[in-house]
Length: 519
Image 1 (cartoon, rainbow, N blue to C red):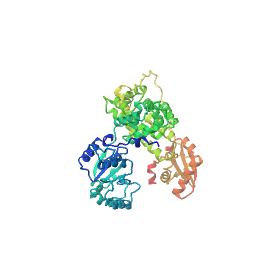
Image 2 (tube, rainbow, N blue to C red):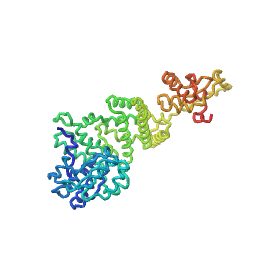
Image 3 (cartoon, helix red, strand yellow):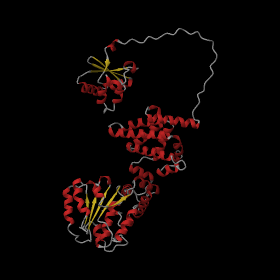
């Protein structure tokens, strides 16, 4: 039966643990000198070797022929632990055994000495999932267990463990594995498994694994499944298999943004959408690239090298990197980051068309004048200062006016203000407007339009004055019904809703929205 690569190539000695020398060297020495503690706490992110180290330690303390602190993996004890047939080594999942009764059952077993091995070992994975009562029940046994018992606790959430548990254990923090170490592991496994894979593809997998050896081997397993073994796995194959956006697309998109080429930027976003890539993931990639641009700007001597190390680009896209670093100011990049993050959060909260939502986001990035956000204004000022210092501002050419004969001024006609239309004489501002807005806040399709409109009350009628686009959208039956329901919900009265178009809203309803609460 086929076995997954991460299981097949699980480390069997301390020397095989990848990227955790600061831990394995201590454990080897303790085992060799017979100075093993009664309880260990292994904490760190997933796939960094916590459970593997726990099993190796269980073998090392019970091994009949240890080699410099490492288990021999040949004696009966080592083989029985590897095959999960050793009754004296128990691996417990705290997520599914988190009750007090489960812990008390464990405590009752502790009093019995091991039947075959030297030590009885309890490996408790995801120990942070235990309930508070279960932790309290475990305290005394964890502090003073019998000399033949060894506890090894493993967790990815150290902050959820009680301090009383942490203080009773010898703690080891497992670090994220460096991409270079993961690349070496992948290369070794691929050679032994006869998997042909390009070096840049290995580097890509090692970065995507985010410091997890298990994730790296799982990704290699997924990308090599069902392929012709005579054809090497390429960089583009990894991108296609895992649904990753081509980094060149990100470069070209930001190049279009720097040139304020909205059409090109939207075309690139459309290509990503058509290729069935997850737009949420694409936005996260854009945020990551903005972050790297910010860091690159703080490394003027090695900025291009830094970006090329973080990302994989084609030679054509690489030529644009230096231009992008110079094109955006720090303030502009910070604004980009806030806009992208806000857009990503909004999409996750509301059920809307992602493509349309992100298109509006890209348009905002291309034209800073479309936003009155303080960060956008700061970015515009920074951009103007940059252009001024570089001399890129185009001077305004003024022409000397020709001398003309003096004109006789005609008498000024003072315009008489338009009288109030009779139909508006009995209209008054709708006092419940703020409450209606609050009621419609979750309706993202119409809330901005209603907020920018003006609302009047006349007898049994509620009149909304808005612009041409607002009238077209708000008069739709579904949207009109939403507003009517909101008005009825806030006032307890059914009004007849009328939508009217008005070119100048300030003439109709000059009262600011923020002052409506004082009506």
